[in-house]
Length: 468
Image (tube, rainbow, N blue to C red; front, side, top):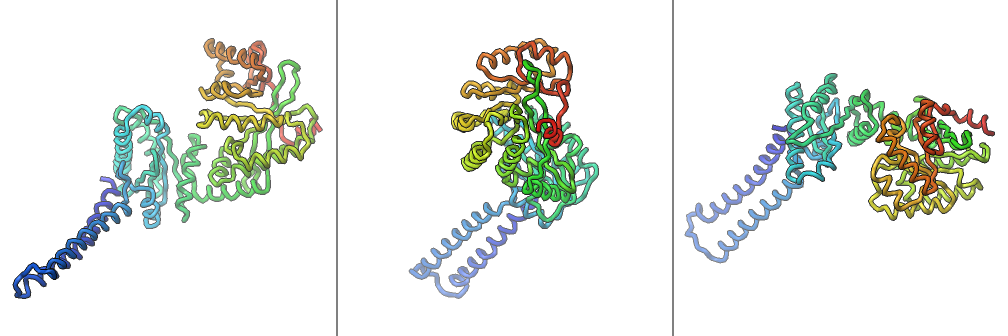
């Protein structure tokens, strides 16, 4: 039985005592007043009021305690693990050494293909299987909670060096539950501080950016990283890397794709996989995009007139009206040719309000800014966008370029290139590392190539020296 279930039973028993004792006293008082005082019982108005009051007080008191029981419930009704509110409260008493987060990545797919009853049973089975696995490995007091959806929080009162391997074993062992295939991800942080809710959110960040080597991290170091990221953002300490795109018609390089890093005095360069989840979680995404855009606008006048910059901006920023006003104002004040600015979009799923989103993109394009869609062909979303919006540039998904030896893959890429050319859209192939790739892609009619086989990326100072 889960620890949460045991504690919920104990809580309900105490609640029953709280309800029972006053009722027993009240009944005893009535019994004494009506039977023990050696007076004949007569059903007069006084007796009727007394019994009516007894019934009303009893029913109201029980109803009040039932309401209180629901509001103060410790457990999630689907899984019987702790709910998040109770879990956070328990952590303040528990003082865990380790926090972990286990996520079912493919919950949306499972929801689409199974009934609510099947999904609820699956979530119940996962949390109980996890509890059994932890108990079998000596962690009998582990707290397990359901955050929301299929996210499970685990608090452990020790720093178990084998915890990562225990979770890996669990993931391998329970790939399939109730004949449903499950795709898991997990993260672990140690050295837990006082800000427990912040640590819980950091776990999600780790999962979003993790690689095989960083599923376990130190909470205090993560907190220090957050401070450094915010400092670098507010001081606009950008460190940009410029990846050249070669024009296959002219052989010249006239577009540079910008890769962004933040620069910290104590941490050196901070990669996007580290700083972007932090910035987005803290609500600094729009500030970051505006700061980056302003930084790029200050760089462009230092370049030759034919040089263009391509960079990514968040769709959430682009949809924001205040962001748009600031963007257009900065662009107008710069007096630069807007076509030298290329905004890259990277979305694997179609936005739920596609028509509204594309209207937003038209506002940017009407100002002369060019719009590129990255990873084109990686999902149905790309084609859905193409039906309703005329992009200036499409950048093909990596798989098309690295699998040119696959005849099916090459045939699909060739058809996408032909479609783009028919629509007068500039095409880009990245990840070009070999001469034979360059030759094949050029013959297909692709306009721009990028990769180690074309030219190395340049740092900001080198780029300025080259084109100033």
